[in-house]
Each structure stands twice: as C-alpha cells, then as structure tokens.
Image (cartoon, rainbow, N blue to C red; front, side, top):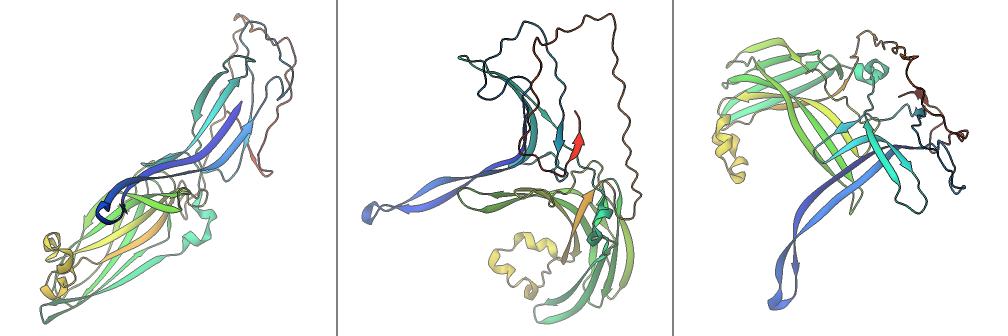
Length: 339
C-alpha cells in the first residue's frame, strides 16, 4: 500500500532562435516544456509479506485490512490549477511473481482548517495612499489624494472586508466610480529546464461603488463580500504550486476610455494629451477558515458507529498473520488521522 502526495505542474512556451549560417541562416520556432514536482507524503505499508521475502500463497476469498497513516501537520491542501495541482492518492499493489502486478489507486482530498488568528502579522491594518497629479496638454488640473484602508490582512471565506476609501480631490477631474476586485493567483515555479515562475491570475468577484466629483472630498466604507468556499491561501506550506490573493482598488477617472485606443508609444504621453490613467492600489490578503478576531468555533461531528449485521456471512480470514506495518519517510511530530 502506497500513500503519496505531491505537487506537479507543466506548461509550454514557444520561442524562436537563429539557426544556420550565411545564406542558410533562418529563424526556427521551438517549444520549451517547463515542469517539476514537489513531494509531501510518501508512506508504504505492507499488509503481508516483506520486500525480498518468500512468496505467500493466499486462499481464495475476500480480505479486508484496516490501516492508518500519520499526516504531517504542515501538509498543503489539495488544489487544482490551470497548469498544475497538489494531489493525494492511495495506491494498492498486489505483487504477483512472474506475472503482471495487480494495482488500483483512489484519490483523496486533504483539507486544512486555517485559523488566521494564529498568525499575528495578519492582524496589522493595511493602508495605502496614492497622489494623482492630473494635467491636460500644458494645463495643470490639480491633484487628487486617495487613501484606502482595510482592518487587517486575513479574512475568512464568506465574510465581508470593510474597505474604507478617502478622497481629497483638489483637481478639476471627476472620479466616476471606485472599482474593487478580488483576484486569485496560482503561481507555478519550474525546476526544469530552468527555474522560472508562471502566474495565472483570475478575477474572483468585483463591485463598483462611489466616486468623487471635481473639487470634492468624500470618506466612505464599502463592505466587500468574499465568496464562500474559496481555496485557502497556501504560501506557508507549498513552494512550487502556490495560491495567493490580493484586493485591487481602481479609481475610474474621466477620460480613461481613451486608453484602449492608445498605442504603447502614445501611452508615454497620455497625461500630456489629457487622457488620465486610473490610479490603482493592491492589498495582499490571506484567506482561511477563521478570520482575524473571529471565534475559533471549529467542531467535528463524532464518527457514526459502524453497523454490523449479525446475520451477514463472515468474510474469510487470512490463513497467516499479517506482517507488521512498515512506514517510511514520515516526520516525527505528526498528527494522527484515519480514513
């Protein structure tokens, strides 16, 4: 019996290179495969027999074995991303001498109960300020000071983030609305053919709220709801396949629709042309099961008692005693789990 868990990932990139010389010189397109893995669990259990031991004859019948393993306390949870995943499985192998081995495997899911109160650094309030200077051609249109604050850096799925926005707009430019987005990033770090990180970012949810007029000040708090059943952040437990989140606050400014039609060269002069860019602020946040300041009310229902039918036929027992279970590559400080 082999119980394993690992991160695995793969993505490809297309590149070009010059090959040949002289008149035969040409541009060639080729594909680079980035891949790698990281092992978290590798446990072997022998229900009967031993490696290199004598063959054992098993009488016909059905045999059932109870087993348990120790899961490391810092085991990352199961996740699935676009270019990779963290997966766990139980694999049973029947080693048949001089024949093809019989084997089967069953995946299982590892969940982490993450109480963010265990990490004091997440309780610190987060604050960012942005000073935007507007101009149009040679005319100065003034500045707008924007301050965004959230009470801490850790939140639970299904809860609200109270986002406070303060505008001190001394310019003649209106901010139409405030766009708040929660984004999730899967990061994959390859080990072959070279070390490289690829990020896959997606928007999870968004809202639009108040803006501010010309020469106007405004201070308001907007509740931003985190969707339920979000995958917890795992950057503390995994290195090569990571999940992280950030809150993006974008101030939508008058004239920004022109940005879509500007070339990269013209964007260098967009303030001079009167096309104002949207100020943006990003807050990295950690998502868990219990948010900062919440009660640690995680209860596990007791297991259901096993029902035994006395009239059911008894399964045949092995005609030999099972060998003691041998487990490999397990850390000392472990938490006992059964499945």
